[in-house]
Image (cartoon, rainbow, N blue to C red; front, side):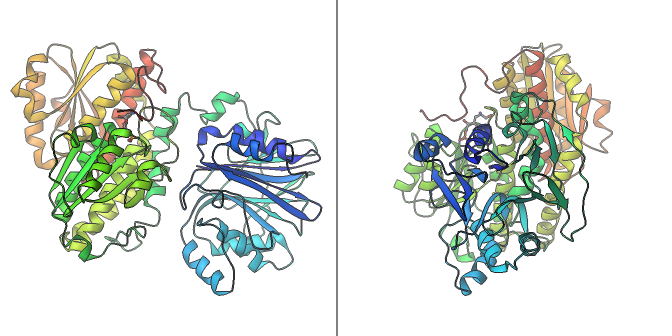
Length: 609
Ligand code: AGP
């Protein structure tokens, strides 16, 4: 989720570009840069670090010119560095681009260009586009852009500059946001409304496949076949703060709604067109890679730890390797049985959690192979692990982790299928079923998010309770743990998750009349026993909210309320079952007037032990 800005007008471009980028800080970034045209030349200034570092770098000599583009990077391909920062140019410096998204076929395009003699400076997928523009330039910038877009596969928001046609910017998008701000004698481009709201509230919201040519006097929109498109002006009514949250009241809700896209982005390039196949180019493992691995450890904290518990189920079921899951702060104090036959997987959204980093270092010291699953490119954990698989959830601002969790589940499932296929321990038919189910998840989540009224009612109804219990068996228990953490960390309701079969060994003593109990019942193989546990708590006058699969009409005879999730395979159910729990926590916290995005006592990244 990078930040993109563009300016064409009579004023100096640099001040708008820098100011616009500062309004996109919430999108997260690890490097920043601007490019400005002046007298036949495009000057690029960029550096790793915060936007403030770029301001310091160019202070007193901001590039002059009235046409320019800017970018704040959230790294996906290539670690944060000066050279990987955007904007990117071809060798002549005549073609410059900024990009938000992922170009799936960039390696092949790069190889073809290198074979033609193109020299690359960065590790990014984006730089390939600048070289393609130079390589394909036919004297007409617009037709060149269309030719290049036909060659690209993936997701993108692009803004292009060409020193041969300096009075215009060309921009386009696919699966990533892009807007155009309409000014008087000037026009603006941005990946998000906050960057332009101080200059104009009249905007074009770009749609996939639209290509806009922007000059200071006007905006012309067409499709890739050159068919003109008439855009409707959208008047922005949000204030600046609301604009940062995309119109949502809190970052947490925005990030809950971003889960379909985050999961789609995380699957990109990994879930093949051929059913049952998963590839991790960044791992390149072979069957032999596991010949000497006797055990896998998954170590993490909090929500990432809960994702690890689900990962254990997947890896043991599909890869048939023993897996032990451990809380990072416990791991290294129990003299763990780790050696060169151990694969250590650490999961961390931030990639900076000190307990997890310490566990990673301990495992390396003991000789384990190490793999990180993280959301932040260039984070400490990503740099210290021998290998890393990224989730592409984009920056997660709210302290309560939501889209990071579901993308971690996706990665763990894909990893288990990948290893299962390599080791020949995963049934081919099941593998196909899993990838078919996987591909449906974004749309299923999207449909669930279209109607959350029932969840709002429950959250309001039970938001005043001081205790809540979450029960489940098997994978439902793993999700129950995450649901309890969500509720307690943002609504401050005391919530506990229990393996449903464990209830009678003590916790049942706490079940009294009126206490809300959320029972997850998506796992068919343990369903009858889960229903018995549900009846146990009902017999003590608890109020039961069940999470069940659509079509289950037995459970509504025993539960007080049922939240249905779309039918899916048992292994994919956690990805859907967690959504109502995230929303329950969110709306309960609202009911209680809690600070949803910044709950008391908590930090987004726990960099202390
Ligand atoms: C999750 O909602 C919490 N904010 C917290 O448990 C978090 O998951 C934990 O601190 C681990 O963070 P990490 O994924 O960045 O390592």
